[in-house]
View 1 (cartoon, rainbow, N blue to C red):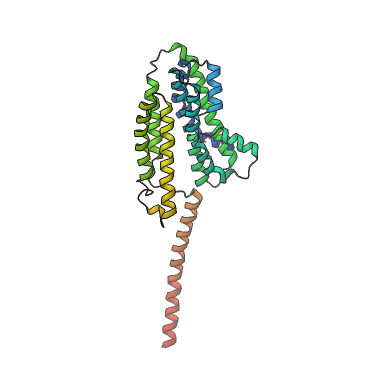
View 2 (tube, helix red, strand yellow):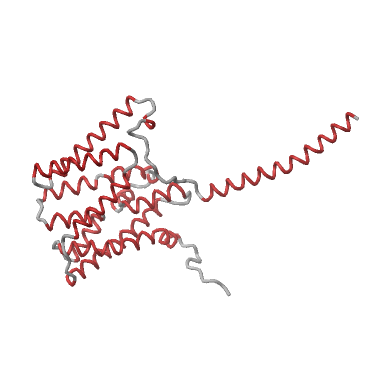
Length: 294
């Protein structure tokens, strides 16, 4: 009895959908929660959908909902979102070498629909799969954008039927940024800057009595981190061995593709076969040498 195949014709868009499906499914509960919170902040489902498509950042949308519920000034909202999303300039630069030959229109679409999660998927696939193309990466971004936007819109639609305590927004944001901090701590310097930013944040919040203190603390901590790293890299002969830049413990990551592993196995097998052939040949040569001596 023949087994049913999900993708018998090997359609590329279905293969890419299979790669991005875990990411899309993970967006559903978070997207629903974000849509409900945006509805509580005063957004209807159409505005929620527009924000999801144009912003496409869970952290930014949670912050937007939080700041709107406390009637934060527009300038504070703009500055907070700007510095939060500034990290995409660094993320995008690490993918630029894979899409540098594409058109300006393609690069614009790719950058506009990139976020942390689909960046991680694309970076892993570009680094480990030789067959992964920029078009595949763009498909991953569009699949994740569709899942996130629909989840947000559904959350906005059902938000009117659900009564939630807006204090949950603070908990959601705290959990979100703790996760982001843990994922970004790569060496001793980033760990120190995290603690410094926390202390400065508390100090400037008490000093300014507004969320503007967080922006000031972020800028100061970032400047201190940049100054320390720049000094270490200029004056140290081996910067990576310096205590500040020494990497903390992280799980080991391999970038070997499946094709590379297969080729490595073939080389090992060929080497074993070569040794097996060489032994009898060497024995024959030894016998010939002994017979000549006799």
